[in-house]
Length: 353
Length: 137
Image 1 (cartoon, each protein chain N blue to C red):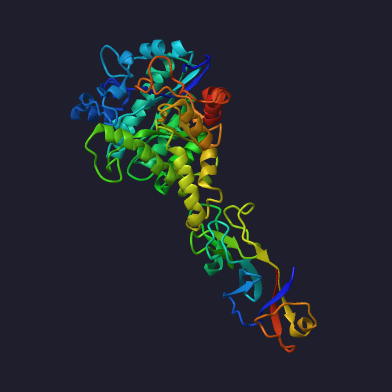
Image 2 (cartoon, rainbow over the protein chains, first blue to last red):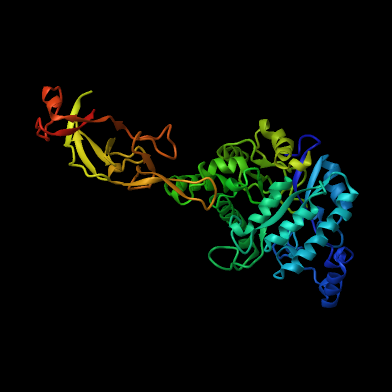
């Protein structure tokens, strides 16, 4: 169904670099020369998880006449923000800079991307908010970038990919979570992989179809790691937002993890509450896509999650998750509508207020 | 309620359990550091012989990476699924309000008192010179 009223907060909107060359003005002298002499400005450093030509990566009617999907502010305004009456849209820029092996190059490009987002998007439309792009395989440099950007309140979240070098709960990542918690950023975990490892636990798949479907099991693994390693005990004010996860896998994770925790919790005695309870308090999921065959199934899954605070409205613009105006999955209970569209995002992102 | 003599004092060594049948139900009688406790030998989860599980301490922690073992020997781990039960109350650790094993009051009585009755001691002969473990069922 369409978003029923103006004022919704859209928690997953994609912007993309037209090309690495746009970052050149945002680099310092050393990195500008480095990138120009290497010719990296002519490499789009695409992350690979969303091939620009793939049907999923842009709805046909949202695809720009030229250039990559998500590169045109005017299209975002006319196709989404003005049409829906969006209050805020949280921009996520997925880019190879996040996962480049060289930590310092990765950090330099991420700094440039964040400054580019501020100048080219946030400065040009007051409805826009954004996630900080970080060199996620370098937690210390990531934390430094969070500290650097924190004074700009238009950044409300830190974005990571669901599949990186290590499961997200591992302690190596904790400097990121510590910095995020200190400044009131949510940690946004988006579908995608740094491809250090196969995107399935079985090895490398052959097809994009397999890769995209496997994202939801990646989310279950990442969430399992965050919960079990005690991230929500160590950082009790932290919220983690799972973006583009598919949603309907979540009740299964909650049951299985809670059942096993009852037997094996002595391994992780810091978790005094069940995984299901920790998820309900700390974890949020964006609503597009919502993998369910019917409105009745959507309603059942929402009931099984067992909290009206877990879901956050998203369109996943310009990815092709729905047609026409039907951004809200059929079957979301009417009583939850305002929470999903407005209240839950405001609770999840304190920097929006 | 009747009082049943289930063992002589010293018969159950510290850390051990004697499984007895009282009024048709199996009960595990434990000696934890000289104190005696009794739980039904049936796990409220899936019906496992609970009292054949191992007595362990209670693992606690305030932070990831921190481990503290308290109440040593006072938690009974079910042999099937590893759920922990408090030997003193029968309450499960994971869901203490709704998942609990039936527990029974245990006392140690001198044989002289027991000789005056009323008590039931089908299998444990009572001598007035000794002390006995008595379970109320």
